[in-house]
Image (cartoon, rainbow, N blue to C red):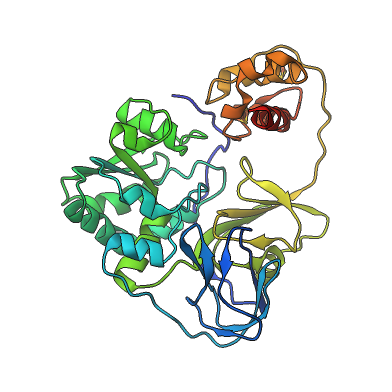
Length: 385
Ligand code: SF4
Ligand code: SF4
């Protein structure tokens, strides 16, 4: 099985702390969005602020709009809620603006518009220290079960497979107790290897088949468990997606927190009394994430915030160990890409296939920043096409 062990033993915690709304919220949107509110408008949590890619941009708070460009800013007041009305699952997924919460952040209704025989529920959460999906599962198992049973009964699925990490007894017991009476829902435990939560590797590990672009080619839909819970809230409770659970890690302290779209990193760290001065802040996972500042806005795409010591590691020459080649999950040769970055032969090494997992940088004994080099090569190749 492809993947590496990046964390000796994950210390899971299932408590979820709600981060209170700050005084201001910033909701980012892409250039092609159509904004429907104007300055001084009063909005509720759930109000549609605009449209992006045919899906609504949902307000995550109640308050007064104070700015539209470049982001929507809202001065927060007391919470009032605006629920959606829908006439089907697909309609609910659209109106509630449900996106895949695994990191892909693609519109979920596009998946469930397709006929598939197998639904794979991804609980692998293979990024080190991240346990937001775990906490969501433990706290909302009844709701997740109700959604899965609805999908089995109302979609052409023949089976639901729940993939979870094999090092978590509490999760295994919760899943076994909850699903023992459902013969069409199968539990599959997999090794805690990174990046086994990546869709392609997960489908290969469970179904022993490969696909080109999309799991539907082999009859599968893959959904992250937090997305299933968001679907439940949209369909059964008419609540749009405006909040999610993420993990915050500061040295040995780890928290699962419920955040609203548009909070800043410092809003979250300050509430948890985490001192972030002189620390490196990484948003979105130690492996897949990026370095950010305390003022960075956290969107629902992110699963974690890390506050870590900023230790600079000395880079040395390549020792030709081949580890970067042997561990790349998409079978690239990072060391060769590095050597050929200015050569016309670069296209033959297909850096555009890189999934940005960071394994090559992590594994390299010479501390060469291979991921950044491959990303530069990827950009070059993509610009040429
Ligand atoms: S970052 Fe890209 S090149 Fe490096 S191991 Fe991951 S997929 Fe391969
Ligand atoms: S892992 Fe680092 S040292 Fe080993 S071959 Fe790749 S670039 Fe060279």
